[in-house]
Image (cartoon, rainbow, N blue to C red; front, side, top):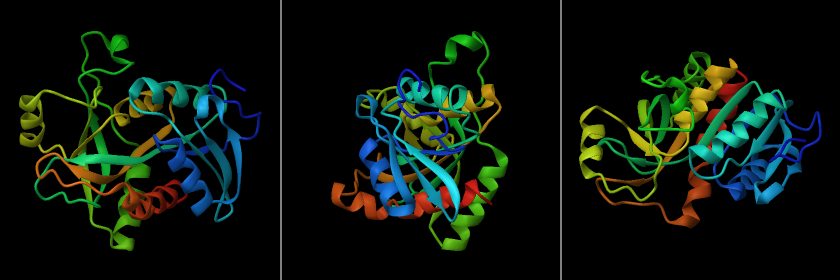
Length: 234
């Protein structure tokens, strides 16, 4: 048991999927895992452990934003020995060729600041995905025929941003989408020598204003979860 995770020793698998929304964690566990058991509900941040094709898997909510994810990722690695952590979540599309419901596999995650920024001082650390996970996720997506984009994303530390000039530069430099957690996850994984990846579904688009209705999101997110699971065990 850690400060924010109430699981007992042995109840957290070495492979952890991390959606931001705790209710999405419950949906994913009930949909994709066998024998899913609730192992954490501290502060309502639900976590479940079960098996996928015989492999132990935990699906643990991370909350919104890098500070929240940092708490759970740190405790999962330091207190429970998690070795592979994959963020599964939604993002906003930024490029014209990136469509609603497309999958983005994040090679890198740019950010202005994160909870780890103070450690590096003058260095602009480049958070990047684990290559083995990235390669396996791309292969899984191609096999499934999912419309997928691989490249850089932007992890924002605010949801209601008021920097259209920044958005313009992100688009100009090929950033595929924006979300709020991956850069810190990649940084923490590098620090703890663990594997990390973000597999994201485009739920809205910054340029077109399109957005998935909330009732369509869970059904659409299935490909993302399957890609993450297959990548973890390839």
